[in-house]
Image (cartoon, rainbow, N blue to C red):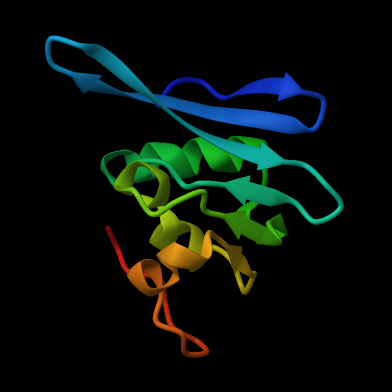
Length: 115
């Protein structure tokens, strides 16, 4: 994880990068939108879950999150979803319809799988 930074007054970036041999680095960003109902956009890579959670906690108390928006179900976007869920009470998830069956079973109370 790289150091979080502010992109705009109400948007914080949780930046990371994934090395790709002979190619460079793939940027992997998550965002916190500090709205009336705070939103976490994506949850980073699973291999950096502990660092992701520390970075997230430096920006917002996970208990204050009201939404998690997963842009898609690739592992670099869903890697810390279980840890985020474990540190919050309840909040809705939002993600493209085509990923629903891949990420969550459609039953009430289903925990997000680890990736």
